Length: 294
Image 1 (cartoon, helix red, strand yellow):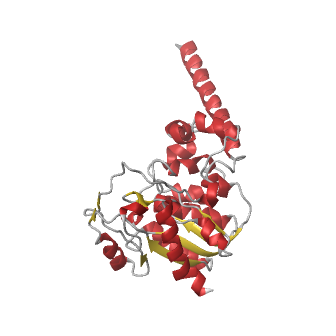
Image 2 (cartoon, rainbow, N blue to C red):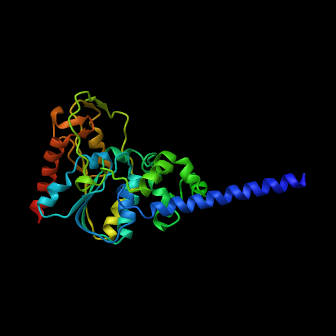
Image 3 (cartoon, one colour):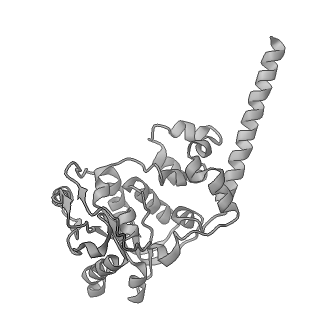
């Protein structure tokens, strides 16, 4: 029995040692990367200077053409993250500020993402490789239910979030396999989709007094950044479009641009404009908030 216990303890210690080594190895790889996505592009960067930083979900990523800002002499990058919620948007802004970026304006897409305060299953895990190296990331996740296991059990986060940060992604990071995420200054242009569902229903969606939107407002005010919060277009055949009026009842300062681009020819799906629609929308935002204000 004694031999069995000793053997078991040795096996457990060996497993723990292997997990620690793997955790260190994976993390070291991620700490060398700055070209795979927008999170590592910020985390592993030094101070940058921007006239305009664009934040939000895919409805920012697909709707704001950064090169159009640049053509007007405005240094710009689109940090919108497809699949992201305001939970991740707030954290990314915290990292940007921690890296001491100089930012004059933040354009924030704040519409459908106001309806929840949850973390994104696809985007939040991409912050995990840095959780032991960043007090900002640690603090942001500290109130989440699974924080203890993710933070204290070595390699656990790489197992749980294998699709996002597991072996395949780590290997691609190690060999610096390029992605398209940082192309076009972070803007992701969409084409026309002939099979797209041009219907949507927002009837049951309710905007919250959102904790993470409040964080973003506070961060911008504290760092003297001009915050421009906007709602972006939906396709015409959408039920419950009064959702956008409900947003303004909670947050009157958010500019409602839901209906400034109309017509299915401008949309790739009901909630996402194609490149033509995005360029039309971006020109309106530029003229209304930046060009005529300089």
